[in-house]
Length: 201
Image (cartoon, rainbow, N blue to C red):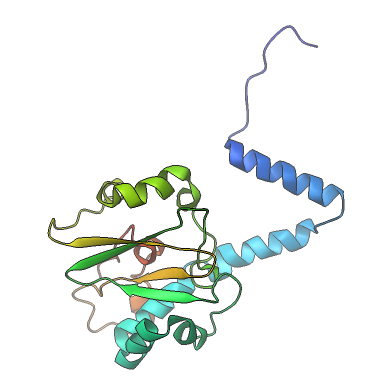
């Protein structure tokens, strides 16, 4: 026992600490292989990430037939590019237009299309985002630095374990001469969740 207080030197939030503790216990009991877990995380963070989704969007921007297929049967269209698997079995793509801006949330937990967007960002899983996105979507967008015209409708889509949504953002003006690779570089993760807009060329 000490007669003085220790400072908290951890930079992890309570949720991260609980996850680390659970991971340590499972590894010590031999239920998980830490190396396999690291490989899985690395795959979704660096090899898949949001780049698969950006390629889907770039293809839709440059190929009218793929664009129509994506809106009609997103799961099949996305799978045709090789992006399929767990958490991406049932996809729906919603398109931003001059009249409508779409935003995605999972109010119950953090359902997210892993095969196209990789691991969800921390804020997507947070209670404040999940609760406020449906009550005050324009306020949430403002927090992300996105201000929309007052006459543009904002639609919020609630993902579930059965259906996961991907936003097809509007193609930026001035990008007409860009190829798919160049177009994909304009597509951000947040623009496919609806909390951001594509980069300008």
